[in-house]
Image (cartoon, rainbow, N blue to C red; front, side, top):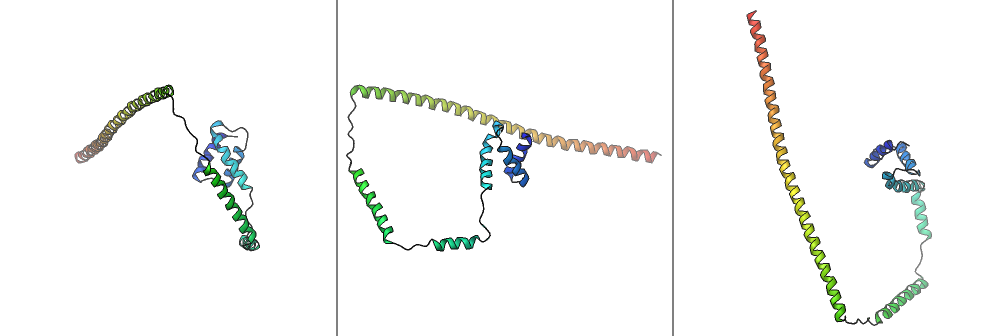
Length: 193
């Protein structure tokens, strides 16, 4: 299997520019056991597409068969349905009552030693968070410097592009001047002869 060609077809597939034969080739390629590692993520997509392609679509008289199915399944409200719903609501209310009736768990106060340990660890956590914030700020400042540098480069690039346009105009004028000079020399030669 030529995976380079498969990658090109895959790019056209995502753009919506493939034929049915090319899509079949993609499904076949990605259903193989030996798929390159960087293309493995697409195997699942084409496996699903392959599975979906085997599904049967409704017949041409779908509307008639659908309406017939609806008419056969019409049911009247029955007392058994009502009793079923009433029983479900009763069970729900009863279980809610017993769940809410449970007493809340009682918590014991921390001892002085436990409080000291908790404060120590919370202090360490706060210190580490401050260090992380400081490092993040420094890195953010570096990125800001990079952005400023790229802005300066853009200014130089614009200046360079303007200079190149001016240079092209000068070259055109120089070329025109040389053409005029050449025409004058031809004209002078004709006059002399």
